[in-house]
Length: 496
Image (cartoon, rainbow, N blue to C red; front, side, top):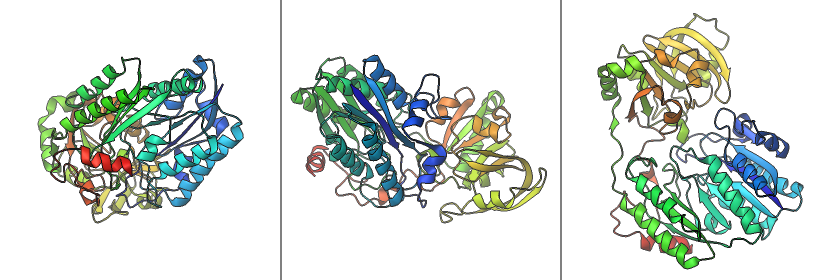
C-alpha cells in the first residue's frame, strides 16, 4: 500500500496591502519529493526554525508503522501574509498535481492544508486545489488536515474523505494530527473504517475569549472533543475558530465530526459541538491596552523586568497573522520612556540605504509606513548602528540604538517567534525591560522562560481585532449583529 503525503500551507490576511509570490515559499519552505523525503527523515528538521516534526513527519511515521509505504510528494509553506498572486496559486497547485502524477499509483493521500489561504483571484483557492487533486487521484481515500483557524466551506469538508484539525492554540500538536490523519487514511484504504462526516457552520466570527485551548472558556470545548473520541465509532472531532482577517462572506466558526459509518452519530455530535461553540460566543477577549498605558504598567512591573521582561503583543501589526510588520506606534511610545525596549520594524528601504554602513555609524531617517502609511505612519529616528546581519526568512537586518530603544529593522516582515530573533540581531533578551512582538499566541511557547508579564497592546493596523467588521457578510453574524440562533445560517451555508 502506497500513501502520498503533501502540504500546501499559507494563512492569508485579506486586509494586507501585500501580494506574495512563489519566492515567499522558496525563502521559507518549498520542497520537491526528494527534499520532502529528506526533511521527514529521522533526526531531520521538517521545517527548520519552526518545527522539528510537523504534520508530514508524523504522517510518515504513522504510515510506516502501519506497514505501508509513505510517498513524499511536495511541501510548500510560507509565513502568514497578504493574498497569493494568481500565478502563485496556479504554480503551487500545478506542482502538487505534477508530483501526484510522477509518484505512480497511490492507494491514499494525506494533504496538509491551512484552511485560510487567500488569493488575488478571489474565492477559495483551497477549494480549487482540492478539486484538482480529486480529479487526479480518483476515488482513493483523501485525508486533509487543517489549522483550527481555517474557514470551512462545503467543498473543503465534502471533497476529502477525512477532515481533521489541530486541537491546540498555540499549535503544539502538528505531528500528532498528521499521524492520526495518515493512520486513518491507511485504515480507510484497507477497508477497516468507512469515514462518514457531518459538519456545522455558525454565523460566529469572534468570541471564545482568548481562544487558548487550555484556558476558559475553550478548555471545556476541546475537552469534550476528546471525550467524543473515546467512543470507537468516532474517528475525529474538530472545531474551527477561524482567522478573523479573512474576507469570506460566509466567515464563521465550524464543527466537523467524522465517524466510522455512522451518519446519525456524526450529525448528533456535530450539533453538540456547534452548540458548545455558540455557548462561548460572548466570552470577552483579554484586555487590550493603549501604548501609553502598557508602558506605565511595564514601568511599575519591577520584578518582571528584573527577572525577565514584559512582553507587549502589537495586536495591530501581527506578522504571525499576516500583517506587514511596519507599525511605528509602539516605537513612538517607547521613546518617551527610559525602559530598555526591543522593537522590530520592517523597512527594506532603510536597510538597503545603510547595508554597507560601518558599525557605529549614525542612522538618520524615517522608518516604517512604507506599505500602509495611513495606519502605520513613518517615524523619524536618529541612532547608532550597533549590529548588522542576514537571517532567513527576514532578510538583511540592522540593529539601531535609539535612546533606550533597540530597533531591529528588517528587510522583510519580522516574525518574532523565538528568542533567536533577538540573538541574531545582536541582542540578549535577558537585557531587555520590554520586548515588543509581532505575534498573538505562538511566541508564548518559546519565550515562556522569559516572559514575566504579557500585555496585548492596541495599535490599529491590518490585524486590528475589528477588521472583520468591514466584510460584506451574506447574513447577520455575531458579534456584528444580534443573532439568536446559529441554525438558519448553517442550513443555508451547507446547502450552497
